[in-house]
Length: 121
Image 1 (cartoon, helix red, strand yellow):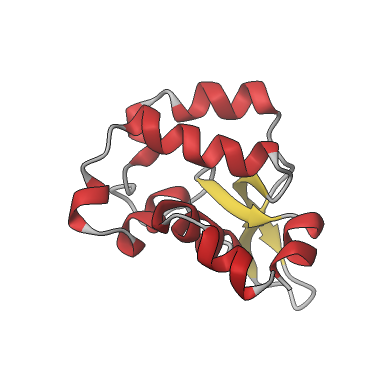
Image 2 (image 1 turned 45 degrees about the vertical axis):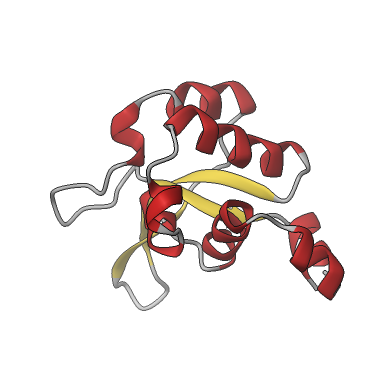
């Protein structure tokens, strides 16, 4: 992405993109927001994320269990959710909260798409 394109992103868009580059869970993006932005209504934040999804830059993939080649268990993003699944997921306030336990299985994970990767570079 050109410097001009990066500069054109709002801070909220920037936070979503950075977290998608990092393959972070959805609630992790709050750490990249200002105090004022953290108070924005969830539907407003969802609309920003959906605009990035609709541009084809970001996907939402739930974390799934995975076994590495060396036999070690771990987690990795599963299959991309459909637009309707994402809309339904983002409408649930708990989706935006950090989980209480140590398991991230099923947590919504932001992932940069191949198109998003090309746009960002």
